[in-house]
Amino acid sequence: LYDASMTYYNYFNIFFDHVYRPKGAKYNQFVPQLMLGTALANSSGPPDYIPQWLSLDTWHFGAQYFMGIEEEIDYDDDESKRNNTNNNNNWNGFAAVGDLYSVEPGEYLRTSMVLSDDATIWTLKMEVINDPNRVSIVIVDKPFMG
Image (cartoon, rainbow, N blue to C red; front, top):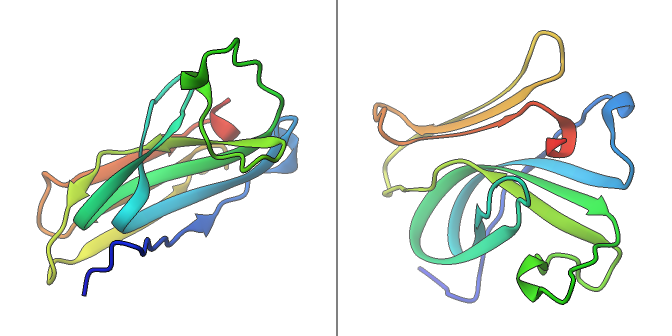
């Protein structure tokens, strides 16, 4: 039963070596999301990676990398740059996202999280099994997207 007041998230915290952790880094999460409701499901993309919420009344999935960074940002009175994830604290959220796809009950999803051999690049991939046209990928080649 669909309840418009509910949003469900499933995520996995990823960790980079502390040597690569930038100043102000709070947390970073690989988010292989199966989403329904009002969910963080999109992003402005590089270079700002501002999270965007969508209202989804059917199931969707997408690969995401969500980052929290403690910082003071000067918005130059441009409210469009405010990403509304800081909850009045001294941190802001940022998101890199793969493509978003609808999925139907009974379909199966496969998720993989792969760290490169040199432990510097994470790749998150979600896909509908037996459908090469619905594949969502996020590649993180620098912690917190540099």
